[in-house]
Length: 472
Image (tube, rainbow, N blue to C red):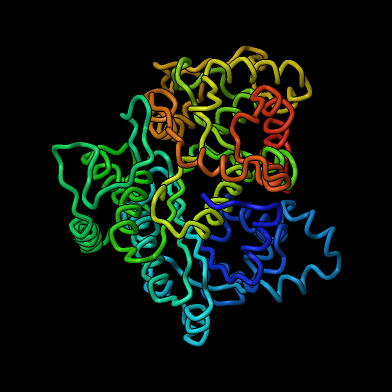
């Protein structure tokens, strides 16, 4: 592995032209913020945003990305010059990953992008577990196909990074789960055969059949969601999200040609550990549903197994891992170690039972949370219950929503017994070990997380600030 110096990251990204898809996503924002902070002298950053035209794309970037508190350090640094800095370095690209060439209408822009781009980070995804099958296939699978094909037309391309998910392994995986690629057509259920072309055909036939019946949008959505879940379960995956991301991996791996490829597989991403500051988060992410509902006094238990490990990873550690993976691959120019699990379950595991204890400690030390409470059950200790059902605590009018959430989260909170091997990611950590400022500025060591301190003093307060109070 190549030797690195304290300014290796800055040197590598200086003058680079980068395309990032899914620019308004939670992880992508943190990645973009870090790149612009550590190396403002990139040449250009193309940010692909789902939008009908460039003006709408630009407006979305300013509202949903650069206007967020996440960028407060950058705004303080640049002052009134921040807008001109962004206009010089950042290009808002209106497009849709489900379309060839991302559906970009401006052919002059396409030509410029193809000629200039050296790095592509494909992060666009729909992360809804039970998304409509046509939408999930278009974004998570065909989006990956369109992105790798775009990369193959870029003569200056150096590396393509695809953000996947660790849970492409399915929820029945047990023991140590290796960082291994999928073969095209590989399934989790060995009895089934997967043909992506057939899956696309089934989607088209189903949509055609529904439309001949003049179904309304609500019915179409319901039936397409059901189709996705059925097909995912048939082939052994727990939900449409993991299934379509797995197919996305198959597509990029089998069609990449000579493009150097990195696949990052983060686990359950939560708020920032330390950068650009502690505790920033957006929305209510998977496990955070449990935290938020408990803090509001709405639940005192939820479906789960108190004895299993829940693999949680702060978002800034994922972004750091992506940046160091790009750097390492630039030096090695090698297709080895192309998959990186980014998680904590192997090197710094936290059990559901530990979470129960820390949640209860937080709520007893912060009695002012009682303002959010809907019941007198606020100080009851939270428990993960394998047999939890929707009629435990919730009123009748909320049961259908809760039933859906229980069914979606059960595979992750109750049934999943795997631990993610991270040999390849450990090699990234070893590559920068002892390289002073790089090791400090790009922390990707799960052992550095003190779970009690991080949850009590960073993550939970961040959730209360950004997800339980008016949006910041």
